[in-house]
Each structure stands twice: as C-alpha cells, then as structure tokens.
Length: 284
Ligand SMILES: C[S@@+](CC[C@H](N)C(=O)[O-])C[C@H]1O[C@@H](n2cnc3c(N)ncnc32)[C@H](O)[C@@H]1O
Image (cartoon, rainbow, N blue to C red; front, side, top):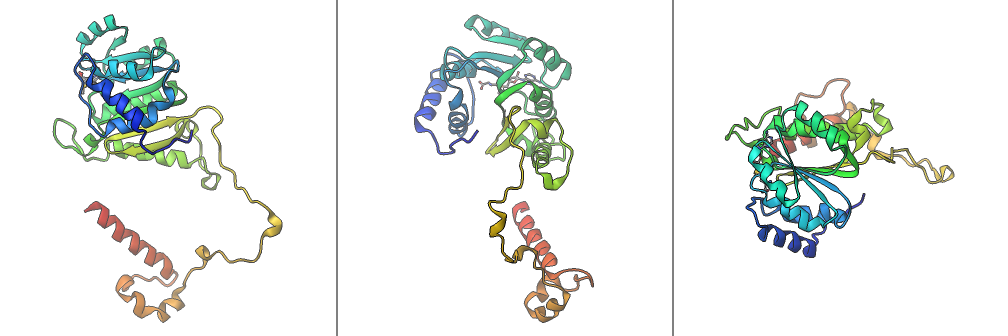
C-alpha cells in the first residue's frame, strides 16, 4: 500500500472542480483537496462503499460520487433527519448520532463493510473516537478512515474542551503505539488495532488511518549473510561512563551539573537533556 505523496495536480483539479460545481452547498478546508486526491485516487472507478459522517446540505456527497465514479456506493450518516431528502439523488442516508455505539451496531448490521469512512460530523472527542472505534472492524482490506477537522483537538471553544488528555489526537497516539507492537522486539500482545491498522498519517487537520486486515506483513529480523559479519563495533551501544565524565567534565558541565548518579551514564543524561530541550522547543 505504498502511495505517492507527491501532489497529483490532475486529480486535485478534478476533485476541486467537482466541489465547486456540486449542486448542493458544501464546506471544506482548502488543503484537504490535495490529500483527497492522493488518498482516494486508487478507488476511482472501483466498486467501493464510501460513508460520510456529517452530510450537511449534501454538497460533498455529490463530489465523492463524481470523483469516484458510477460504481461507488455513497452513504451519509447525519443527526439531522432532514438529510433523508437527499436519498432522491441516489444516496443512502442513515439518521443517527455518531457518538452512540448502538447506532453504529445497527448501521453495520445493514452495511456490512465499508471501504472509505470520512468523519466530517460534529468533531468532538467523543464523536470522533466512538466513530473510529465502532467502525474499524468493519473496514475492508486496504480501506481507510479519514477523520476531518482534527484541529478541534486543540480548540477550547464551540464545546470542544481541548487541548485535553482525551482529545482525539491524544487518543490517536495509542494507535501509533499499537502499530509498533508488531515489532517482535517489544514482546507485546497484539490487539484488534495492532492486527488491523497498517499505518496512520497526520496532515493539517486530517488524520488518515489505513486498514490492512489481510497479509499484514509482520516484521522479522533479516540478515543478508551471516558469514559476512565482522567484529565491527556498533557505536550506538558504546556508552561513555562516569570515568569519562570526569575527563569530559568541562564539555558537559553546564548540561548535567549535579545530575550524574554513580551508576549513571553521561551519554544517557546528555541525551535526556537534549530531548528535553527539543520538547520544550516544540511545546512553546
Ligand atoms: C460540517 S457539516 C458537514 C458538511 C458536509 N460533510 C460537507 O462537506 O458539505 C457537519 C454535519 O455534521 C452533523 N452532525 C453533528 N453532530 C453529529 C452527530 N453527533 N452525529 C451525526 N452527525 C452529526 C451536523 O448536523 C452537520 O450537518
């Protein structure tokens, strides 16, 4: 599932054109179109099911249909029952609350599997997290979940109550950890996420979760030819000890001051200090 991250100007122009010419009103951030073009390109003219949470006036439903082609099945999920009116244009609309797990259970009883799930609903932490957690088991192999407007993870108005430890973005860092569980070095238990989420991508205000539930390539340690191994020292593991600290005291004195424990390593303390500096930089 390797995808080019170079902009696809032709597809981007196309989807932007379909957005502008949609017969119904729609609202999207301008940087999204390059992302859509890149990630939805592979589904064009395929028999896929796209579900968009948050239908609004319906403008984006027309855009997806035009972009993906006639074979695509476009479904909307919307709290406002008025959206049902859009069914006359060939879309299937489900009325329901994306933060209600029972809604999703009954939804997936009817719509068994989805290829593309786009969350453009209410954008609160609970809505985004519930929709993701109730859906990822129902996404087809090579399918995707696109969560829009994730800048709300940093917004403290319009009821978003962020930044907080329960923001969607903070929640998504658990997915990152789960993906890394596949590496045997960590000796961690697999769970549904580590078994299904191939990768996660972060963009300005969009998070994309790539699902791969077949032939997920579990990592194994590969060596090309054991006979070629020499006594080469891997310098990553060559630590400077406290003795060397005394020699290098002047160099690092400002860095570590009195923090060196008898057992500790200068290298470790130096690294911690550097990382702390970077953390400070990115937090400010
Ligand atoms: C920004 S609009 C969607 C716009 C549309 N996707 C477009 O691009 O044109 C957000 C929609 O989400 C709906 N919504 C808000 N909270 C929801 C919830 N809990 N469940 C389902 N839909 C919700 C709102 O009623 C509104 O129509």
